Length: 318
Length: 246
Ligand SMILES: Cc1cc2nc3c(=O)[nH]c(=O)nc-3n(C[C@H](O)[C@H](O)[C@H](O)COP(=O)(O)OP(=O)(O)OC[C@H]3O[C@@H](n4cnc5c(N)ncnc54)[C@H](O)[C@@H]3O)c2cc1C
Ligand SMILES: Nc1ncnc2c1ncn2[C@@H]1O[C@H](COP(=O)(O)O)[C@@H](O)[C@H]1O
Image (cartoon, rainbow over all chains, first blue to last red):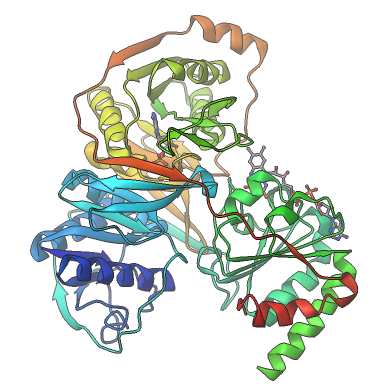
């Protein structure tokens, strides 16, 4: 028995979502009185910080992470067999959504996607349903269990320890897909939206793409990532990957600042898990205020410069 | 091209979300069901476009009870050729995937389309499970898909961007925004849908692997604290000291 965590690194660096999955796995292992073993692909320096996040051992597979879900699931299944894992944890990110279902189907295991809390002693796991409008308690009924952890829901441990690393090999079989090209739209150093803790977002109230300057400036000062409402991406004012909401990216940052966004239910579905929501809108009746923690009724073009000034002063003194 | 599109039903996005029976059941009172948007706007419409360009057949598949029929008819009205309903309660993801796989196993579909996720369960897992059960490649979160002979070129979402992939048929794909534009069924389509074949098949035997015990609503916000626009800069201090968000 053990708990296995698939932790994805990007060029040797583990994103917060991977560390969260490892921490979650460590807590589950503690609950079961067993070990938390992480598996990752490619080369990492030392244990890559996974010991600090709670792993007791790190298996490093001498293959690059691939976009072939079959190869990746073969790798995880081989590691699960070797370590006797009956609970397997992923992040509910691009990789987790691609690999975890395959692993669960192969092991005939129940899968809870997007867990937001640790399992109870009898393996009831909480997850958001109805696009964040409700919470479900899901009982896992099988001996083998697979859980994907919703990013930004639970903390990252800081154990102060290092984990032993061990090389791992498995037969992945031939690839059945070929990657032709990778296009990343992110600007240098910008944190991708699903991982961002601070997000500054704007909607049609900004009137046109040429007015995004203050949004970008505020985001830059705060170290935030920019997002937008759907119509803004649809008309091409902003790139598609910024579109949040029911049909776009779902996010749950610590802070979501919404400027000139009405707060339609389909928009809220993608952002209502945010811890603190700030709404800036000139219409006091805008529905978004009902979901807000802080609201400013006013013209964005007058309000934003004041906030930018204050943010600059704050950053200069902290 | 022989194409299968897996379609789930979901409550209309404006539905009031409430529960009955001590939180164990979704309250369907006054709820209007729609085709899950990812399945309809992106998966189904792209499948129809491929058929229109290259010929073939588009079959709808749903795992669910008789209450699924109106949404299956809607998918037929948009342009699918025929439909199959596997008569079973959609108890959990692996159960649904097993039903889809059991049906598709001997049918030699070139492409099995799913949506990226259902907007009620938000799983994003059925397509991957189907792919594993059928030993097929999975292209998840696809935003563009073109086919040339037996080879498909697919763009999929990855962290911070997109990736272009080539894959040979058969394969499973989960569709996200960008794949196609929503189509509104016209009167002719609605009339034609009434007589298109809808076959009901019994469920394959399978156990549930998970069960929802209980639903709750998220805690309500304590209310919005308003800041005077003249004094907008004080937001930063509040975010730091009170909300501890920065
Ligand atoms: C099935 C479905 C799925 C959808 N999915 C999504 C989704 O994923 N994401 C999404 O965002 N939308 C989605 N939508 C669209 C959604 O319903 C709304 O239409 C959309 O969110 C509105 O965008 P907006 O708030 O930017 O624009 P608007 O609704 O036009 O609102 C603009 C706001 O800006 C304010 N404003 C104007 N000028 C100023 C100013 N100078 N200063 C301050 N405020 C100002 C106005 O008061 C108004 O509240 C979906 C719709 C459907 C039907
Ligand atoms: N009951 C069902 N019948 C047919 N297809 C389904 C069903 N449930 C889910 N699917 C398909 O699987 C996709 C992902 O569902 P989920 O894993 O529940 O988020 C959906 O977008 C559908 O394409």
